[in-house]
Image (cartoon, rainbow, N blue to C red; front, side, top):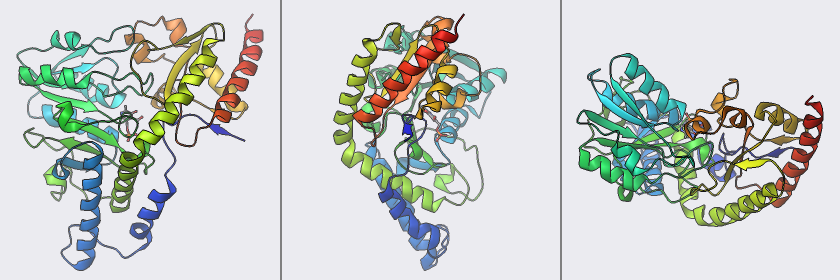
Amino acid sequence: MAVYLDFNATTPIDPRVVEAMLPYLSGPAGNPSSVHRFGRAARAAVDEARAEVAALVGALPEQVIFTSGGTEANNLAIRGVAADTAAVGIAVSSVEHASVLAPAARLARQGGSVVQIPADREGRILPEAVRGTLGAGTRLVSVMWANNETGVIQPVAAIAELVRESGAWMHTDAVQAAGKIPVDFAAGGVHLMTLSAHKIYGPKGVGALVADRAVDLIPILEGGGQERGLRGGTENVAGIVGFGAAADLARRELEMHRARLQDLRDALERMLAARPDVVVFGAGAERLPNTVQFALSGIAGETLLLELDRYGVAVSSGSACHSERAEPSHVLGAMGVPRELAYGAIRVSLGHESTAADLDALLRALDRARARLSRAVP
Ligand SMILES: Cc1ncc(COP(=O)(O)O)c(C=O)c1O
């Protein structure tokens, strides 16, 4: 029996979400921009989903711009705020997802001023560190709500307060936080927030940028004026409906899952702590209830991951998007973790289906893998 423990990479679609999507996959056609009854039905479904996504994060429906996922929403936030002039200043945290870091790096190549906000040893971005990077020309600050690798939760509201005082816009990538812990757009004081459906038991290829109307965004995809003119293209109606259904379930069931997952994760950490040479990253910081990233010193994470896979246990060596690359995680690098240890990183992320039996299977596989791999080391 295979055991899936990689829910931060992606989640299975909840069967209730599939149920909600089916009429829009196999039912009558209807373009939300069409004025006839078929179009109006599609528009109503998209608008209902917009309200459900907004409700998950304490935003207004009109603030939700549907995109093709978290990556596009992050690109829209960075490029959309900075597109009108290359001489713009932005600050991004050093532990962001590649879909924030890559457009920021492009902006820097084009002559923009891009500063990286340092993390502390636990992977936290402290407000003092943000203050140090705010300059007169800073237009946007991007600090994620929670990190995909370590699960470390950032003090977003405190950072947003500083950013607001400075007159810049505050963006947060809440892809990993939404649905796992309470996330509030208004109370968090942010101007822009990224979400993705497939991390909350919805379909892949759909996400949103939640955007305060005061932010002067320039679209990266122009066309038929959909999504307030900020994201042209006929809406992915079935995907959006699925996103809405997933957001609605996540809002209603969050507390139930949060408590159970935190208990499971804490039990796993206690069992890991009983083994020699295990280092848990970000252990001193507040973290997502479902995530633990750790290393067995002396064993490469990629090797361990493949070995665990042979025993039927699926985990990640950090960020799924990095798994073909040999470089150790930039997140651990930013935390000052030595390269040798960072190479050993394994991320276990639990989900709704996870059970204590899954953790037993993981630990058994880990012990077998460790025994085999340490024998292999000359
Ligand atoms: C923190 C974070 N931001 C953004 C993304 C990208 O989201 P999507 O897969 O919907 O493009 C991911 C996915 O791994 C993520 O973990």
